[in-house]
Image (tube, rainbow, N blue to C red):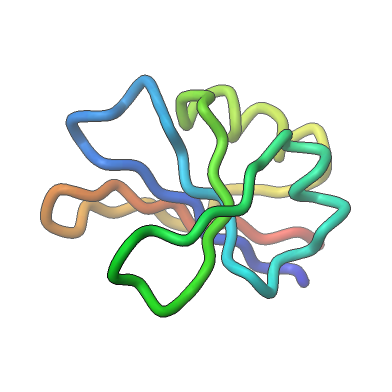
Length: 84
């Protein structure tokens, strides 16, 4: 899985950070210390960490991921990362 999306709400810049969905690499989710949850009303599961995005980005860089793009979508910040 060379691509990864992480996101956080603008008002929550100190965490939590969403780091994956139910199909994400389990080993990577364990490395990040992510917890799997299902939010009431959603038909999918997501992985999140309590760390702010900066800490998550540092951990992912150590694993070889690089930021490809970053954008704001409404009240959400989203980073797209790629691993060679």
